[in-house]
Image (cartoon, rainbow, N blue to C red; front, side, top):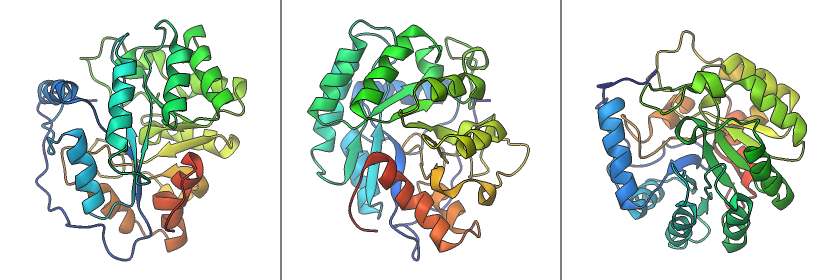
Length: 297
């Protein structure tokens, strides 16, 4: 549960990805136009933690790439109707500064007019999937509005990154994530759209057991690690990552909206005891497969 005045941790940050690790693809990085980035930082200041990295979109990409991250999957989300096209243009413009190094995700507000058309335009322009956030956008994943989005992505062969886990939750949200989010609801989508690639951030926190079971059943579902391996949240038991299906887990940082060092999560993976082959999957190959990336391996 998010709450005001959560700590910002002044842990040491490295100048580069730790030596000995495979290629690192960060599959969960946020960018926004500066006015929205400022609003996001104010929201976190009031309702969660102080964001350690107050950067522009260009600064986010420059920072991670200069610190040894090989490829970035950049995310955004529209918090209201009518702004998705502008956000998608911002994403395209930002990604063009780093050709071949950044994969940009589109956004759309579920239920807004012409949602499918907005996504098709974004895909045709070069964005490679869509990011949705149920806590912020307050949608029911099983609604007809969502079917239009899922149909568009499935027919376009574009993945959906969707924050549908119940945590981290906040009473400041306009809706209750515990009412609209669940692994059971996602499973209905997985059955209805068998060719739609879906990635759920934060390992599906707080239903990690249920989401672990889902990736063992459905080949078109992935989970990312974002923030849940860092010992920041109060999780009752340590995530047994070594017991997960290794071809369905992605590394993500949530940079820059984090209260600790940019490399905290990748260091946790380095120190996890996982063999190099498994780290290569989590840090590199799984994201490359999901997003159709090429490059160094």
